Image (cartoon, rainbow, N blue to C red):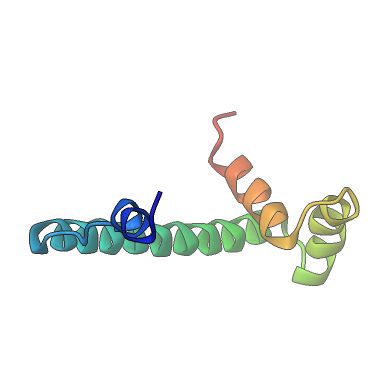
Amino acid sequence: MTKNTTRKKLKVPWPSPEQMERLREELHKRLVREELEDSWRLEAMDRIITLSQADPITFHRVWIEPLLVAGASLEVALSCITDSHFQPN
C-alpha cells in the first residue's frame, strides 16, 4: 500500500449540513433529558430526606455512607437511593 492509498482509506467523510443539524438536535434533546434527570434526582433526594425525618448529616451517615463503604461512588449511591424512591412498593 502506498502513502496515497492509505490517506484515501483513512479519509472520513464530513457529515452533510442536514446530518449536522440532526446531530445537533439529538445532542440538545439528550442534554435536556439529562438536566431533567438531575433535577428529578435532586427533588427525589429532598423528598426522601423530608420523609425520613432525618437531618442531612444523619441521612448521609445512615443511607449514603454504607454505599460508599461498599465501593459505590457518591453519584452511584445517590442514584441508587433516588431510583429506589421511584420503585413501586
